[in-house]
Length: 101
Image 1 (tube, helix red, strand yellow):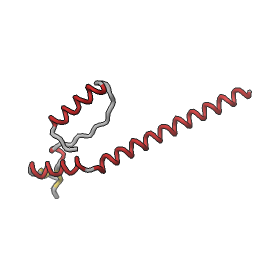
Image 2 (image 1 turned 135 degrees about the vertical axis):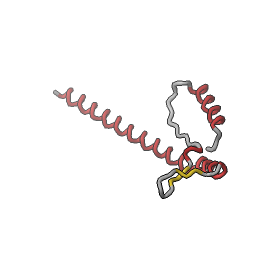
Image 3 (image 1 turned 90 degrees about the vertical axis):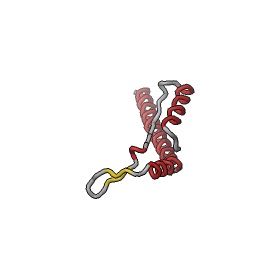
Image 4 (image 1 turned 30 degrees about the vertical axis):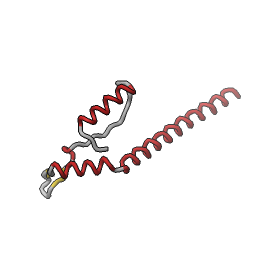
């Protein structure tokens, strides 16, 4: 999603109104300051405003990042559910063993 910082601020303010100031989140913000490369002498090379905006627009318009984040969220949910289930099952086994003593 490509936005200006002002538009991003407005969106964040809306999220705060909807979810509260203490709502948890994960955020990744890239600005024109992040669009550069290094030359052969390890010096930062900056680009024109037009090229920088084009790059950020392409990155923000790509569904790849959102797909990857969605997959990571799914993976972490599965992992935590697996851990909870293993812990829950081990507690049941321990309780059953304790009852047979």
